[in-house]
Length: 124
Image (cartoon, rainbow, N blue to C red; front, side, top):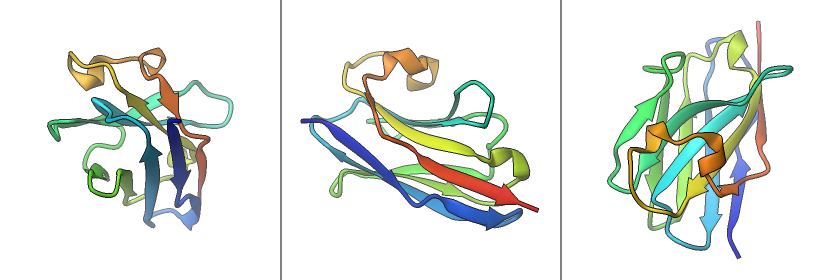
């Protein structure tokens, strides 16, 4: 049974940091990603990492967020630094087993496995 379980969300002041984790069980993923959905807005892709370790970020978080994974622990991470008010969202991790292609090009529907989400709230 495949499971993705996020943790690490919370409330933080602008400029602060959080570290999100996503514990994965099941098959080996070819691509893993973090998505977020701000209140009242569409879901958006934040960062991806391939099984080769290649990472790509949305322009809005480049230089502030870092995606990484610990294969031995089957855990995906997202380090969030210099948080801004518009980073407030529900954050989801996602995994894709099927191989091939550049992970950043994949849409949300291409990821077959999702976690339940963890809330990040940034206040002034």
